[in-house]
Length: 176
Image 1 (spheres, one colour):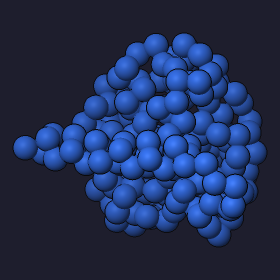
Image 2 (tube, rainbow, N blue to C red):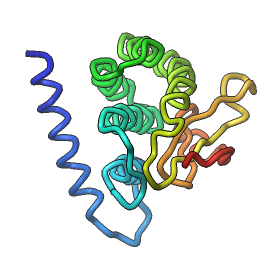
Image 3 (cartoon, rainbow, N blue to C red):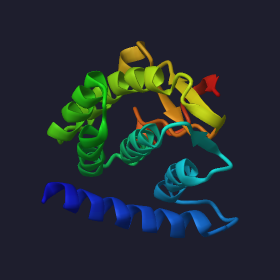
């Protein structure tokens, strides 16, 4: 029953993303819309293609979580993390996703997301058929300890500070 609810939710999200991604508007985009473009890029074959469909699905859920954290939406982050935990094959990814889904505290979710990112980097090593994923880093996250995240876009959208410091960070690596 839970899997069918998650599949329905995922299908609804995907439908919205296809619609939002297809809209071309030249005026500034609200913070939600800008990150939706990042999520849509996972589906865009010209952006990046994955060798394994399961890795693509895992990365899609990762972007879902990142988008929610950028937007400061702890409920949506928990939802995306629950879906990720269901499809993840690695224990580290599953454990980090479960930590995010079990919490409603955005700070705790962001801390678990940093750990999730490290595990995702290992998963994405040699996972792309074509395209690029950008490793981005904010040196100020977690009291200046710094933390990284992965993105399909070059534009910085910081999941650790959200709108407080949305563009804080830089690209530190390009994964091909």
